[in-house]
Amino acid sequence: MQTRKTLYLIGIILNIVYMGFAVLIALIYGFIGITANPIVGVVLLVIFLVPLIWTIPMTLAANKAYKQVGTEEEVPHIALSVCTLLFVNLVSGILFIVASVMLTDEQDKLKLENKTPVE
Image (cartoon, rainbow, N blue to C red; front, top):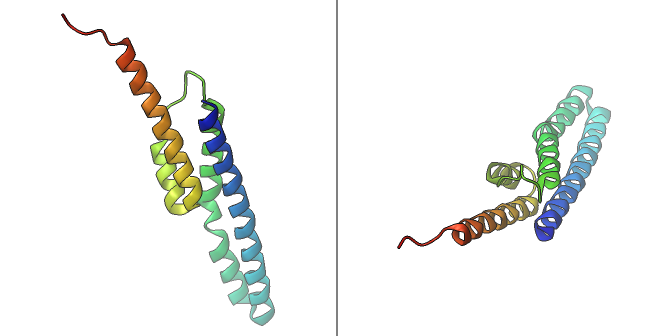
């Protein structure tokens, strides 16, 4: 349980760092573009800020998954993991996938332990 919680926490931190860099790059390109041509600057600013539209909700969903670790509501978050892998951060997505697989393995192990052989 503690390992899954740590994996989610590291992934969330990496997502937040990524968002900071994305905003910084958007501001730099936007302001450079605005000084050259205001229309181009605004377009660049919008283009670089659009990825945050899906980065912020996925980071919030990862935070929810982090809070669910060790509770009865905990479920594998494979869809969140794959979306994070594709759209946000490669390392965070891999960490979330590993955490989800660890949960699935624990659930399978519990099912096998509770299963009694048929005589």
